[in-house]
Length: 344
Image (cartoon, rainbow, N blue to C red):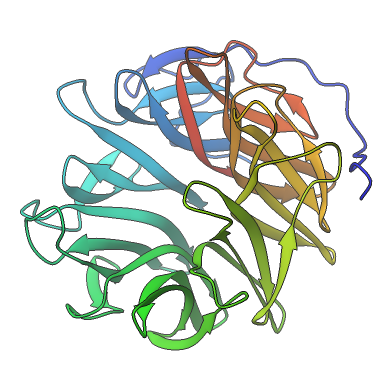
């Protein structure tokens, strides 16, 4: 397998400045909640444990420092910026920085993914059935704040990614089927299929629909501690590896299809057992970080490929966005980026 060669562009590194949501975005001359064509948005977490989003390299905290929160997904539609995540036990979606709680906070819940189609806001996530740490989760889809259960209380399930194509709503996640955890896809709330590989346990982390083709990425275990990345196209599985030297495990988190090319963001564990961020293009891998990194999201805009994740040292990880393989957040704040979105 040959290393991917992208047409790297010469770009100026963006200065990374920590801001709160009330300050003007002085670095790019615009309000963070006034999107414009070409703006690069991202969502994630910054230290100590705050949900945050970035616009063109400038960070904005969505919460104060009194609790634990994280932003898992971001989507820009028209003049609105939507972020999905959680605050404490509460599954949350922010619209232009204004919080909407999707759950009541009695039981642990997470909003994993947000997608906007027309005037409708779809959020995928999951909520525990009870307050105990061993209680199963229910996979959920919220449409404009109204929830739909994708699994019932007898099945442990999670929903990790949502994608809308025309009138169809696809959700990828995991559910226990026949006493085994399996990657699954729901279409319009109906379970479509179990995504398998060699009768192993599987889990799905991302979904993308291109024409009539449904792409899902996820993982299956190698052993008790490690796994390998899988991409399913219309239910057919292919393993994503890396040919340059030995590797212990690979993980896939996000998929994007553009012009017939399939991009997958994930992580690679080589000899050192410290993860490196990796991007696959049509199953050929390009390592993005030389030490301690993972790639959680990929977005393709024209000829440019954006990847979001983290990159750090032995003691800490910094938030990072790569454009065509080059780091944009050269002075990235400690934390991680979970999702990236480019306004087109």
